[in-house]
Image (cartoon, rainbow over all chains, first blue to last red; front, top):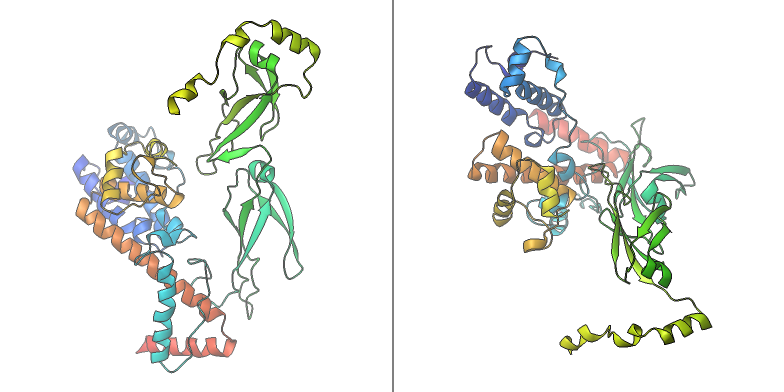
Length: 319
Length: 108
């Protein structure tokens, strides 16, 4: 790791202002989002950021000068840049000239361009996934897009799904834990073979997550309606609740009504970006036995308050 | 994600920053008013906007100009990429003819 003073091009006695100016000047030049096509910009920017991290903090700078920390001791955590998103499948959102339509227009622009240059009948611009494909004109294989439907629990927990491709090959696709509906996975080199020894294109697999009978995902949280008995609702108790990670025990407080919502912290889906887990919300639903026995009937006949309270009182103000 | 989740990801970011960017059309979350939702690309864009303004010291107008140019570069790259893919679908003879033309035009 290079000396931060050398990286920023300042003297060891530089003032804070000089350091800030030097960092800004270099960052403006090397920020990866201001150099979308330059892969080397990321490493350069990281080096500048790391140097600035030390020299812009008086305490770290003093410790570096005193030899207490070295230049590499300040690892900048790996991060993504806007360009990764802008060149991905969602990138059309901020594309100049509007959304999807501009890609249709563009086909016209290019066809026009080629017509003018020598009477070609124009190319086919059938791509519905802007931004992917081989770099430049390397004539590598074409990318291919598939759609794959996976069970809810496999997307939640992660797992391998074997698929058969249209050309007869089988492929084990690694579905990562916490895969959201609509996620696109990239399978390097699984697209169309390249010509004349060029590398094969990539395959893109769009994951469709099948709905689950009772786990209902909202963002990274999971909502479940949990049937409980009348006894559990009135007296409270511990019940087993299914979660995507397996069953857990839940304490139901005494006097819990239908509709009461309880939270199981950290039992939701994994957020792949923040690596944090959502929660599971359990909504109680009091369920009577299919056949009420005579004892229950007798008890209710003798239960005075049960005839006195009106659960529909609140409805009157809305009618 | 919601605006609260967004703000919790970026320490120095305030709701005022975000509202200003949305008002100026630099950021386009889904939904409206109190119920904005930010997709992955919006989250990454917020980080870039914040860096342009704070770390790189661009003022409001310069940020608008820079992000506008960044958008144009990505649009052009997307179009070039499509063109490259269309070329890759052509028969080898056509692609070689185009490559030869490109070399010739590049020299002049």
